[in-house]
Image (cartoon, rainbow, N blue to C red; front, side):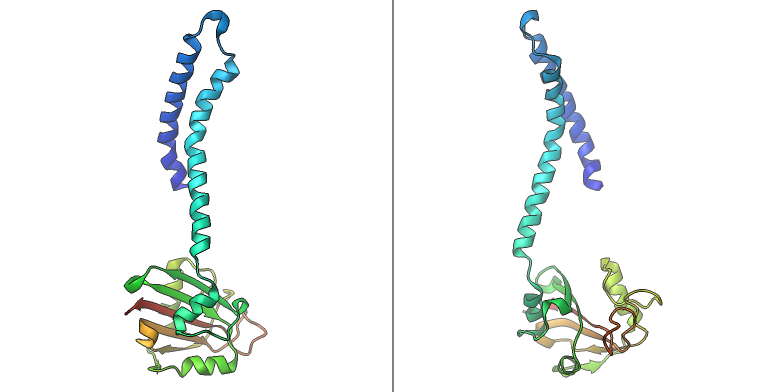
Length: 204
């Protein structure tokens, strides 16, 4: 919507240019050799369409490039943990931002008991005093619809969770895990809810 509003003055300028070109084309010809009105009208219409077509083409190109360079879930999991994971793509959700010190990866995973135990036994893991409501707010600020929620009735609602900090793990300045201890409505077939991970700030 914002991009379209920015296009309005550009389209207006293109319309004026198109009208001028069409008028010159029409009146520069003799009376018996003038183009028909449909052809003349096509000139300003075409000028108006040019910026719209340009925006669509650029947007499409950026989407294709973004798709090509975007990491797979498996690659993001390996970046988070520093090694390949046993988790399959259908059990993980990710979103990532930035690079280097500004790097952030948000992860949600449906883990087995063994995978949970392995995750929570990583080096430097300690029980955190970080509140679940603050952890949930991290995803809210990003606009995630799949992140943990403290709102009863929400599909991602988690009534109780254990939060673990492992700052410094695999070179991350912040590494924080929220283990939902109840299945809620998000994963009714699981004895536990999802595991959520925030990894941010690369030290290397």
